[in-house]
Length: 166
Image (cartoon, rainbow, N blue to C red):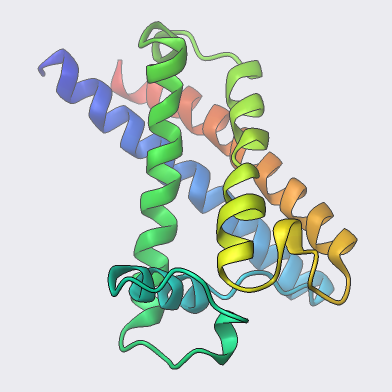
């Protein structure tokens, strides 16, 4: 297999695996502790409106429904996860894929909190770092936790793909 194709496949799988780890964590919290997180339909609604040139809402839940917003949200969620996973070999080099260590994906996972806090949440009308929500501190803690899970998912999936693809 061509080296670039192998790197691309491995990176896509790492992104999918890490995003699945987030989803499993969200599912666990929802079923065990009744903790709700972002409705991916609302992400799809936001993405759908972005495609139409509308980026800011107050709040997104009050904006009209977009046809297919749930599937748009799920696809966007995984595309974002794959995009961030692609930063691992871009920033730390393809050698990281050959010898994954935990520091880089842990750092990257926590760094991805910048996107929701300073882009998505303000654009969706809930303020910088969820400042306009009833309990912003709780939202921030959940955000940090789920992005930590994403980072650990990046590492775990990198280990698995390294074993199975090499």
